Image 1 (spheres, one colour):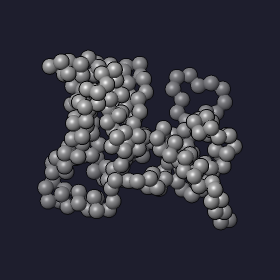
Image 2 (tube, rainbow, N blue to C red):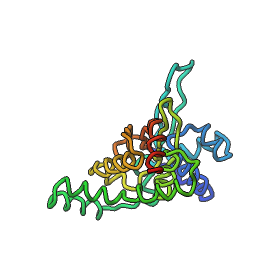
Image 3 (spheres, helix red, strand yellow):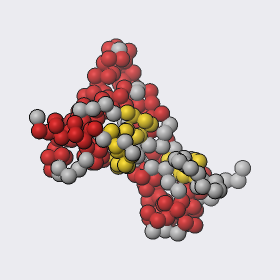
Length: 228
């Protein structure tokens, strides 16, 4: 195997922009990235090639919803675990070791209680965000809350409501071993909205983005809670 040539130093800032754009917006095609970053598709593909060769990104088949047109779907590029590690992760081996000790000494319920305390910011900050801007939908308010905590969250419209998308997870590696962290997040989201929500995918289990389906009924439930 031929050694990979080191990228020119001047390319590093642009390559970081490409990687961060994937981090914040989720798996993206080269054309999406070119449009988003005002670069040529050829330049983006060059940076993507280096990210893939370095093990920081991987190409995937783009999921197509509904009827598929002619031709093969464009490839999307997602960050690998190594690519995410380049960005400031809010966990380390000490966190995993501490939770293992907590699990061994206090059992799964102790880990779950810790997970619930960790996401107390959801209920605390959601009320503040809604009070500051009443025009936000519940999902939009949650996206602001999670983004502030480092999740790079956004919202997509669905036929049955909205989808909260967390493009980054500060505790993904820890949550891979301790799914209680994800479960506590889902609980907290449902609690502030006063309705059941469905977690569809998580970065901790290999998906490109964490997604939570928030039904239209959450809007009315949230409004009723504010008036109560």
